[in-house]
Image (cartoon, rainbow, N blue to C red):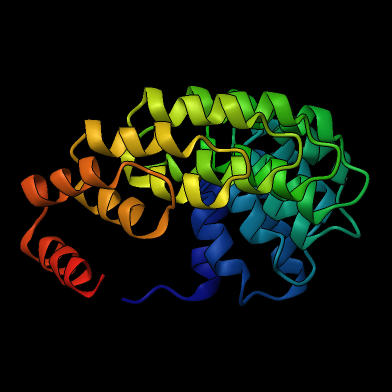
Length: 258
């Protein structure tokens, strides 16, 4: 026999089933919401409390305490964002500031005014997240550029190496020489051409040599075609010896035209 809603509500309360309580509350009357909410407050987790806070008649401050106690940065931001007029935003921000969730720290810094930029930036540094280190430096006034730059340098991989290029190109106060040395040290030949083309003061010869030393035919083609003053002869040998048919054909066609 199918259970009715009242029976299910009683079962959720009796069994301390906070997930069932939350699901039932979306269609409950105001009195039942309060009873079901008590299950969330006493036995629920932060994610369920966040969901319950969307229900009409929910006690935002009481549910916020569940979020604060559990201390998950991403949920703290979501709660603060959705209930900014009632929530204790500074207390929720502190969860992100004391953690190592780079995205949450970045979101607090960019979505709310009068945040503690220093501590939120430190959370990004602790995260070792090169992407959000760059974004924080780009989008947050007063950010510690040198600390964030070090995070990018220390956590570079071939996949995220373009953040080194982005930092050098777009961030005022970036140390171009250190970032370029990172490209060379980690042999990031796939961004060498872009770095040489777009970053003021870049050493085009050192970056072109990286393309040669790593036998990166695609990068060598770009250097030979677009960057004036590099060793075209050496770059051509890389293209011809290591390029795929498409790159070689493009180069041969260019050579005939010129």
